[in-house]
Length: 159
Image (cartoon, rainbow, N blue to C red):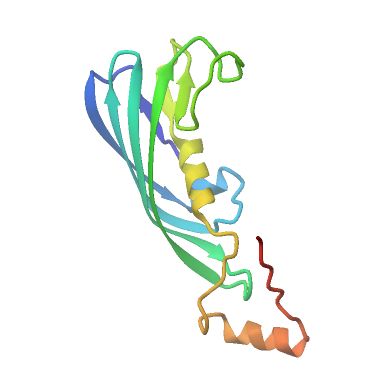
């Protein structure tokens, strides 16, 4: 999946790009919790001299496994992720320079902004730690098998 914006060729001003993100996108990162997806990504890029403002909006749904019954669980996704891209020869690891979490630093000669990692990170961090169907929606066959095997699903509270 190619979620790359050619920022060098953009004129000053605001430009929009759209991407479709599906199962293959998450498979390219090793899958993780996401077993399916149907996401629309809209990126508005406002280019100025020396910096770029990016507004990334991700909407749709991802499919994960229910932690209780292992059946597919569809989760809605609605993410707004604004950030800034700055051009600098000083790396992010330089201890004398402090950038916020909402800043991506590119070298002065870099001409592309690859949105793939950003999209992946925002989607994965929006998935709840506990992924379960609402009461009554779990696979009844699986729940019955768990009951027959005397398996109790633990409830863990994190404080």
